[in-house]
Amino acid sequence: MAWSVEVDLRVFLVEDVHRMRGLLGDMLASIGGFTIVAATSTEAEANLWLDEHPGGWDVAIVDLVLEQGAGMHVIRRCKADPQGGRIVVFSSYATPGVRQHCLDLGADAVFDKGQTAEFIAWFGDLTARENSGP
Image (cartoon, rainbow, N blue to C red; front, side, top):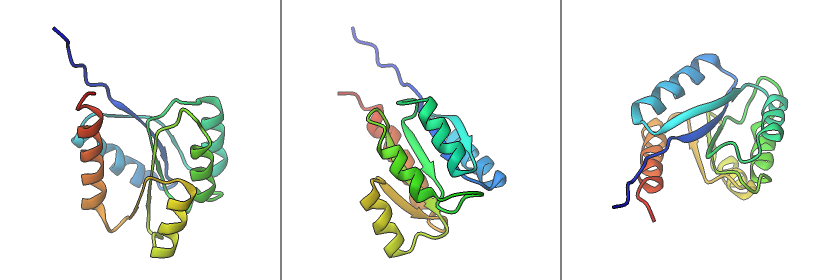
């Protein structure tokens, strides 16, 4: 008999607003199936963490406007990790043009922070896909 084991997806969070990091953590906890493995607030911190933890994440949540630097560069860096996971942008600046640019850089999904319901649904769908087995 084969046993199915659900494993939490490892989340790398790139968000400069401390309160938003807390809210995202609460949201992921309420959905279940996610563990935040790192949270950074600048492009340099994000790139350093990615350099030190190749393949150490399953989902990256990236804000575009950071305390220092830009999320666009973090998307590019995440995409360069051959063992990396999915990249989702959650930003107040997700205009249609910005959204397309993020997708062109390799983001899997882009949500404006006003699209919270859609963002939560994307994560719910992600856990269902990941835990459905082969």
